[in-house]
Length: 422
Image (cartoon, rainbow, N blue to C red; front, side, top):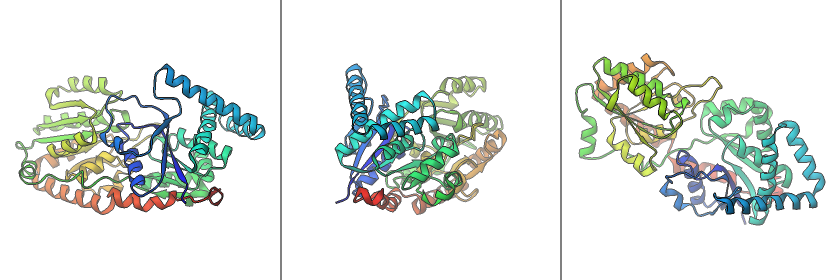
C-alpha cells in the first residue's frame, strides 16, 4: 500500500498561486493520496472555485483565523513540542541547536516549532513523504521535519523562493531531499549550480495549463479577434500581481509611447498588489486616462473569459536588483493556450517558451522603447497576430499541457515504506 503524501504550502488556497492548486488537483487525479497542510491561511476575499474540488482537508498550522482558532492551534503546537522534547530530548535539542547555528534568528525558532507540530500531524495521518510547495519557508520546515522524524521530503522551486534564498541554504535543502522540482530550465540551472554534487536531484517540471479550459475562441468571436477595432488599435491584456518584477511601469510607459505614435492601444490589467496606487498615479501622469483599466483580482474562470475578449497579451517582466524574477508565468501560458499573440520580455524562463517572431514577440526587459516597438508591430499587423496566436497555442499544447506534465512527475511521490526512502 502506498503511504500518504503530505503537501505543505505557505498559504492555501491563494488566488495568485493557481499553479499550486492545479498541481494538487492533478496529483489527486493521478491517484496520489495527499494530505494538505498550510503554514497560514490566506484570508483572501476571492477564492478559486476549483479549490472546492480538492479532496483532502487542509490542516492550518496556525488556525484559520480568529482568537479561538489561533488559541487551539497554539495549544496543539505547544503540546507537540513539549511531548517531543520529553520523548526525544537529545534529538529535540540537537536539531534545534543545528538550526540556530545555520540561521541564528527568531524565525528559526518559529519554523522549528512548526516542524515539530507538523511531524506529529504527519505521524497521526500516516504520511510517508512530505512535499513542500516552495524552496524557502515550506522547504525549511520540511527539512526540519525530516531531521526530527526521518520522513523523507521534496520541494518545489519557482521564482522568488529560489532567487532570494542563500545558495548555500539551497544546497543543504537539495542534499537532504529526495528530489526538487523546478518549473523552468533557467530555475533548474540556478538550483543545480547551488546544489553541486546533489544536482541530479533537481527535476525539471513545468506547471503547464489546462488546454481544454484555455483555448481560442470559435466562430464569430474568432473573427472579432482577427479584425482589430480600428487602424493600429489593440485591446491588450495583462494578468499578474501588481508587483515590481512584473514590470507594469515599463508597460504603461511603452503604451504611452505607442499611443503618441498613433497606435490607440488600451490595456486591461487583472490582478492586485502593492503597486496599484503608484500605477494609478503613473497612469494619470502619462495622461493615459481610460486607456488603462485596473480591474482587480479575478477567478480562473473569469480570467479565461478575459483572454477571449483580448486581442493580445503583454508580459513585461523585469529582473530586480536583488535577483528576483519570474520563472515561466502561468498567465503567459494561459494566454498562449487561448490563441493570443503575446509580447513579453527576455526574462527568467520566458525565452524557453517564446521564439521571437514565431510564437510571440520578445523585448528587452526594462526597455520602454523595445517594448513599445513590439507593441506597435503587433498592433499594426493583423496577419502577424493570427500567425503568432496559432503558433502560441500549438507550443503550449505540444509542451505545456498540464495533464501530461502531472502524469510525468506523479511517480516521484510513490513511497511505499518509510525505510525505503530514508
